[in-house]
Image 1 (cartoon, rainbow, N blue to C red):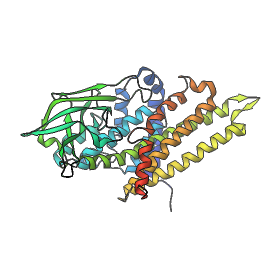
Image 2: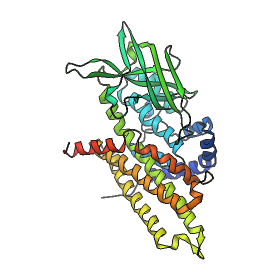
Image 3: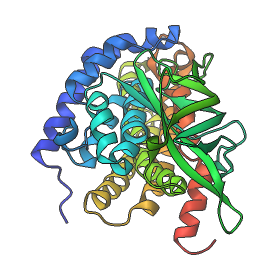
Image 4: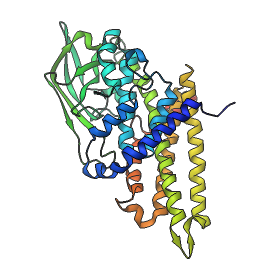
Length: 383
């Protein structure tokens, strides 16, 4: 077994890390304070090639493997969760469904702009009363001649209400199946379509400089050909999309945990009490040792899941495991890091405070920790 990364992966990690340190770290705290989405850093991330990482060059992507995308997300998250959220949501949830389920016309129409970072795209799944129970979507679409008429709403949708958001993929109820369950389909809705409105959500605890939106559809009409893939396959598309998305959330957890460890290690070596660095006290040294151990285990699990995906092997169970473990590892690392900083860890002037807040969404978004345990339990045959 060979656990070494390829030269290309190492070069990618180094280049993204340097970029994040130079371009994102100096502005992240102020953007968080202002709750401001940065179009400047968006453009720079696009120029670095962080959108469409796994998309073939034919459609404007970078043509890399999924592990490359995960490493890039990890390195951005090591510096700031909001920017990592923009990258993760755009690639996994925005670009992914179009790339994997779109027809040739849809791919050629949307993907080049999305892969260049010229435009962003949302994934309209969550509703006020349909979170973990996503199949209970109340947003409906009725076929009227050659148009779908959509009514309903979505909430907590990333990248859907910026000034460069080109549209959103919407999970809709399009009928009732023979077994009485709802027929779910995904439909593409472009920004500016009559009857569709998106609004930016504010006053968030975390990811304050990422774009989070609420969406509303009122007799919104889109062409029949805006159906993504086959009618009634929306739930399958959603599940496949979330499998890949869980790996990116895992990458955010892993990168965030590494960032917490780096900050904690630096502070513990510099901060002195009783005449020596606090890192030299066993109680603190053990915190750092535990962090290092958990991060190493998380990285191995996440990278294995990516290896499975890149080799076209089943990875749904491992994706759920990686998402669950990496998000909880960041929880532990953020908690230790704040504790090691003491009172300073509670102040906005120290980045560890932001990491502590940002972590929480990782245990909720793209399937809560409870749902991940449910998925894992089903895979091992106990539910």
